[in-house]
Amino acid sequence: MPEPPNFEIGWKRTKEINLEKPKGYIIADFLEKLEGLMGREFGTTELLAKAGEIVAERAREEAEVLRDEGKVEERMITELFRVLRLMEMDLAMVKAAVKEETLGERLEQAKARCRQAILVALSF
Image (cartoon, rainbow, N blue to C red; front, side):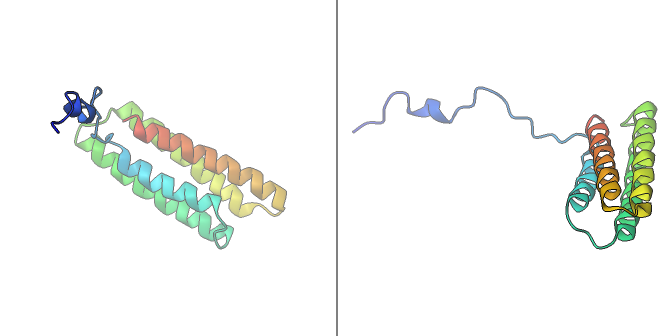
């Protein structure tokens, strides 16, 4: 039996799939991993705050590389630095929290800042 006449049409795509990653995907990857850590039970709050500081510092280094290469505008880098600083402040508040209820609220705030930083990084 011969092939049906419309056999070839099934594999053709009507819409092109963009495989290019945004410029800030490396930064977003770091931050997504940190957000995942915040969602789990992660040792002590001191360890979580230290991990947050390390991730923020690494994200800043990556952003400076992108800025030096001329791939990202200065205002976007400034916005990312601002959000990272706020996230670090929230993590310091998590470390200082005594009550379980306060710890939960501050952790949610830190996760929200982390998601905001991810959005900024992906908008590069």
